[in-house]
Amino acid sequence: MENRDLTNTESIIVIDEEFRVLLPMLDEETFRLLEESILLDGCRDPLVLWNGILIDGYNRYKICSHHNIPYRTVSMEFDSREAVLIWIISNQVSRRNLTPIQLSHYRGLHYIADKKIQGANNRFSQESRLAQNVPIYLGSTANRLAEQYNVSHITIKRNAHLAEAITSIGEASPEAKRKILHGEVQISKNKLEALSSASKDEIETIAAEIEEGTYEGKTPRSSRQANADAAFESIIPEVRRLNAVISDFAKSFNSMLSQMSTGGSTEVKPVLRAYIDQLEDLYKNM
Image 1 (cartoon, helix red, strand yellow):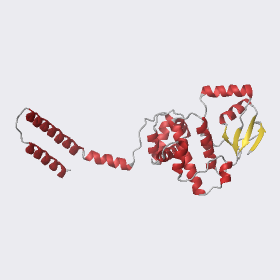
Image 2 (image 1 turned 135 degrees about the vertical axis):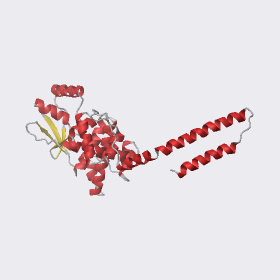
Image 3 (image 1 turned 180 degrees about the vertical axis):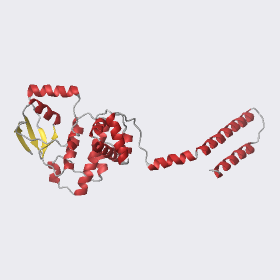
Image 4 (image 1 turned 135 degrees about the horizontal axis):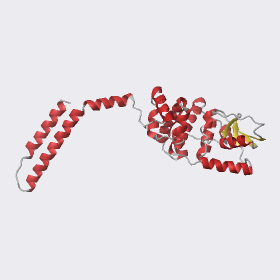
């Protein structure tokens, strides 16, 4: 790790959009307080770089650039972009109060990045992982991250679907992605998970609606769901008839019980037989 004092006129800092969106903007009041602090005391915390790319300190960098305030930088070394992404996620999760969607997004991205790293190299050296401040785990990725984030492995995998959907939406409309992550659109985690298997056209349509402010929270329907809905529509008449048969039997049965309780005599078998006949007839015609 290299630590150098630089000013904004001496350094060239690259803003990578994939990393920048993981460094969320502060709300207006918090940003104002940070700006006042930096104007009064200077930028006390260094900006963190990887190959000249800013990976921590976006808000400090924005303030310092605007007011031409000197800042320090710290350069870190990583084996891959995925390793950088995991470091950023771990940093953000540990220091911020995140919304449920933001936290799910981070966990999902962590899982996806970790799987890519394992795909490229199934065995990391201990020195490399320690140098990156990335813990060394054993076992399946989902189980390891589930333990780290204190959730179930199923939640981790569902979060991966959510992250994939948000990434796809971001490719169609960066503004729509920003609105989702900043809570400016009402869209549930379940709907985002469902969108991971949506078509490109569906993604682009929903992204456009979110960007324009016309999104109404409709859940995408897969072809399997559409077929299931059609099948259900075709048996609605039989379902209604079955409901009528059951309702008639309930009335007959209650009447029979009433007669028995008052000392009246009634035949149970004929009532039951008639009910069974109706059910068999309905079954044959379905």
